[in-house]
Length: 63
Ligand code: FES
Image 1 (cartoon, helix red, strand yellow):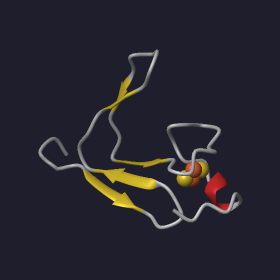
Image 2: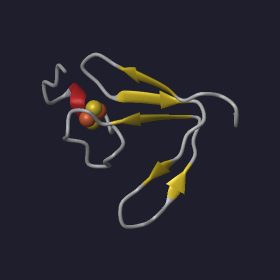
Image 3: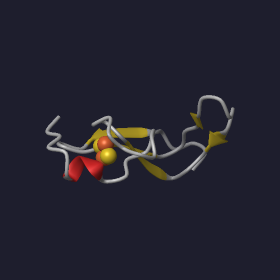
């Protein structure tokens, strides 16, 4: 996975899918996570930001 590029895919009406090799730095904690695939909230209503929690399915998000 170290040489694999990160791939960003906008899911219509849903989150931003990020897969491949990447790091994510969360504010305040200095925590750096590496995961194979994550889904980042684009609608702004997730209760577990920056990650998608599925709320976009109920809030009418269409971006
Ligand atoms: S995009 Fe899924 S909760 Fe915001």
